[in-house]
Image (cartoon, rainbow, N blue to C red; front, side, top):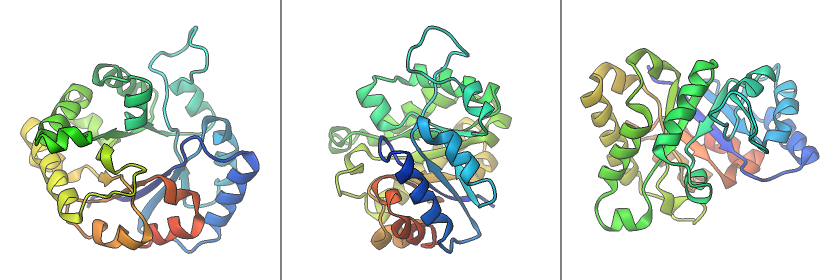
Length: 249
């Protein structure tokens, strides 16, 4: 049975005090015990967040990492640095990394390899731009992102991969793919995985939806058969809203 997962991507938000306060507030919430819950604070808060969540069901995830093990890459963080402070999962390929920092599928394939080599799990993000959907090439775009970023992996390595489909036009815009649109794409993703590997692998990978998920729409989105949870942006900065999304299953 696939894991149900809700992860909160805090992006570049919250200072140290606010980070601690939000985690305290989350720990005070009643969260569905059948859902894997995680937060992705900025790099500077990761160590404190790991320590703060030691005895809770909330996991801590990095927002990104560099593909090299070390070197002259000012401002970057390596996989081994993350594992050394107790972080065991990282986001990779978020649309903002792709758009603002020009991360390509080829680069992301190297980051995925570095993460797995260091024992990290990966939440791999991908999705189409608005013009790509309007041009009816959104299925092709998603297929290419999966193929170029992940299809060099063998089947066993997929046990460490979670997918997060994020239609870029629905991130931070207030727009949301309809539950039917989300289901349609998630079913397509599974068909692509089945064609490359097999149906057992395709049915075993958790596929999250990301894009303006809120307490008001989470239940309907999560009720779709191929949607296994959400990668949550703005709503994850409010403990009550985030808890409501976790409990929407």
